[in-house]
Structure formats: C-alpha cells, structure tokens
Length: 64
Image 1 (tube, rainbow, N blue to C red):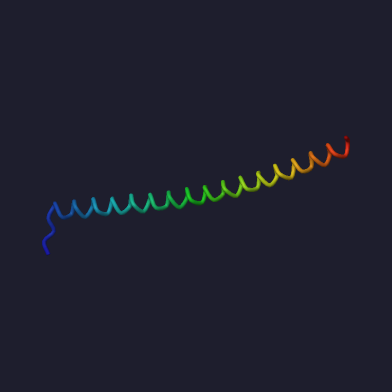
Image 2 (tube, rainbow, N blue to C red):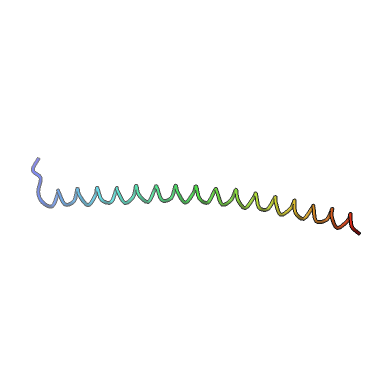
C-alpha cells in the first residue's frame, strides 16, 4: 500500500476529529455529573427549607 501525502493528511485529520469527539464526550460526562450534584443540592436545600418552615410554624404556635 502506497501512502501519499493526501492519505497521511486524511489520517491525521481523522485522528484529530476522534480526539475532539472523545474530549467532547468527557465534557458531557463532567456536565452530567455536575448536573446530578446540583440536583442533589437543590433537593437538600428544599428539604432544609421545609424543615425551617415547619420549625417556624412550631415556634410561632408556641409563642402565640
């Protein structure tokens, strides 16, 4: 098989495209992980807010 400059260049471009694709795939994984962490934080904050509101109602009822 004879390798020409064009075939070598094509191979290099293809390899660069695969590298970019793999880098994007890793970026997507990182974003998915960050999104999941944010969801968990929001759920935690919502629970904390509900607890605060319940405690506030209890305190208000106690002092009125």
